[in-house]
Image 1 (cartoon, helix red, strand yellow):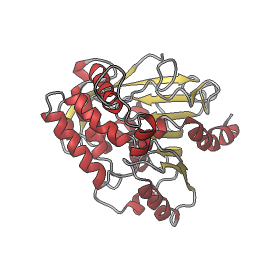
Image 2 (cartoon, helix red, strand yellow; image 1 turned 120 degrees about the horizontal axis):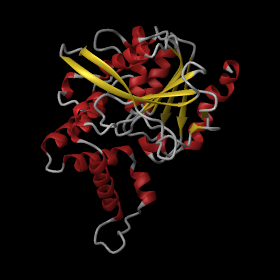
Image 3 (tube, helix red, strand yellow; image 1 turned 180 degrees about the vertical axis):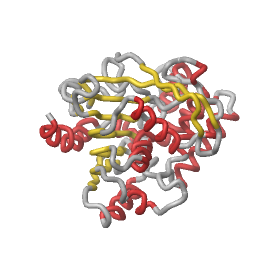
Image 4 (tube, helix red, strand yellow; image 1 turned 30 degrees about the horizontal axis):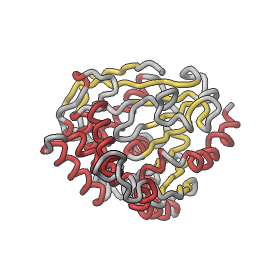
Amino acid sequence: MSVLQYFNIPNYTTKTGKTSSLKMSYQLFGKPLYEAPIVLINHALTGNSNVTGESGWWTPIVGPGKVVDTNLYTVLAFNIPGNGQDQNPSNLIENYKDFTAGDIAQIFALALEDLKITQLFAVIGGSVGGGLSWELAALKPDLIEHLIPIASDWKSTDWLLANCHIQDRILNNSSEPLADARMHAMSLYRTPESLKSKFDRTLQDGEAIFAVESWLNYHGNILNERFQLAAYKMMNQVLRTIDITHGKEEFIKVASKIKSNIHIVTINSDLFFKPEENWETYVDLKTHKENITISEIQSIHGHDAFLIEFAQLEVILEGVFRIVSKSHM
């Protein structure tokens, strides 16, 4: 696994006016920095910077010979500040409500400046990572050649806000906050059809509970073992505050300034970031920006399809990484 490297921000002032000292971590994979086109990958809510390798969460599409080929690209992945990846309690963020997704994008931009990176070949993100990709592109309209938000959106919808509010209540009021919040979230990441296909009302072997209940318990317990409560609160806060307009301008005015080729990837069955919202974004922005496309993953598995349907995702990404990359080698 690539080693964690660190970037310090001694006095960062959030958009809410609060000042904090932050220490964020990141990892590099593939070609040495500055020797190849750079791909920034933004992780999902309980993910981290370890995107490829034996325990990498996106190894099926990132690595040697994969669609995001580490023989050809430098892959950079930041940890969202406070996500607990380094297991250092002092780097957790307790005042999580002082931060927004816009702040995280600003922090990423500061880290890129510190690394003297002025151009990114691509920025990819799934779920909240896709929202952060939108935020970074809006903040730095000339930075990214290819913007690829997957199973995400440029804003937190009312539906998403409602579920993040429930998550926050669980995290602050439950006697088993991590496990309970995770179980609630897992029921949204999948679909009724996905759960029927996987379990079909079967009972767990040797237990008097349904297999779907055992599956939820398992995911709740696993997260409880590997994640910290403060980290989950922080990630949920980032998810609920995605909004590239920051409530000040119209979406079209902000998004049309983004110079990137935008490749939206949506999922037909996503109950979290609804495909209808992504198609609406595409249609609205297409009238102002020619270099925008949309692709739709077909799956019964809902939001989690971006972590399941790798064959479809590979075909979609090939258009950028295996055809366009030839002109950069």
